[in-house]
Length: 365
Image (cartoon, rainbow, N blue to C red; front, side, top):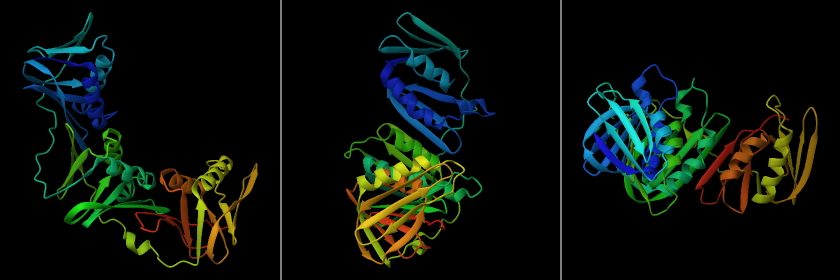
C-alpha cells in the first residue's frame, strides 16, 4: 500500500473522521481509522458503534491497500509534517512509514479484519436541506438537551417532518427549544430522535455556505447524513419523545417586547452573581413601559430597569437567568417577544411566525 496526498487535505479528513473516535475503550479497533487506498483517493472510516463516519481524501495511489492505524497517532504525525505533501506506505507486515521531506515516522498498524464497518442499511426516506440551515437549527436548540443518561430520550433531539416543514425540538424538563423551517418540497411524515452527540459532531464539520446541501436519509433505527465527500451514519434513540404540542400555549395575559441587546446585557450581567450552589432566580417586575430586573445572592445584589412595550397585565415572575442567556445567544432578532400567562406558568420566547419557540419554567419567589 502506498499513496501520497496534500497534508492540509489529509488533516481535514482526519479531523472529520476523528469525530467518531472513542477516547477510552477496551476495543483497540475503535481507536483506529480504517484507511483504504484505491483509485484516486483514500477513504478514512471511524466507528464508535453509535456514530460511523466515512470521508474521502484526494490522493495519488501507487499501490492500493487497506490497513488499521491508531487515529490519534496518525493525526499527530500528519499535522507535524514539514512539507505540503505526505507519503504513506505500508508493507505486508502492517508496518507503516509516513514521511514528508526529511521527517519520517514508523508505526505498527493492524490488519483490518476486526474493524466494525459501517452498516449496510436500506434507507426508506430522504430529505435535502442546506448545510447552513441544519447547522443553525442545531445551534439554536442543542443547548437544552439533557445531560442525564437516566432518561436517554432527552439526550437527543426530535426531528419531525410533516409536509414541507422540518421541526427540531429538545428539552430537559426545565426548558424546551423548538426551531422550524420550510423545506423546498413535500415529504412523507418522519418522526425520529437523533442523539445530541451526533448532531453536535455533524454541526462542527458542515459548511457555513447556504448553497452547500446535505442529504438526510432515515431508516427504522438509523439516520445518514451525506455532504461533500463525507458520510455519517448514526443510530437513532428508541422510544417516544415527549408530546411537545401539549406544552405549547397560544393564550397569554402578558406580552412584553424588548430590545434584545439591552435585555441580553442586563441578564448576562445578572449571571455574575450566580454560583453553582445558588438557586436564586432573577425577579422580573413588568409594568406599562418598564421591566425591573432584580437578583440577590448570599454575597451581592443587582437591579436594573429597562424599557419595554407591554400588553396585558402587570406581572412579577422569577426565572433562571442562565436559561434566558442561552436563548438570547442564539436568537438573531433585534427585538424579542416574551409571553406569560401568570407567575406560575412558563415563559415563552418566540417570534410571530413561530419559527422559533423557547419555553422556560418559572422559579417560585
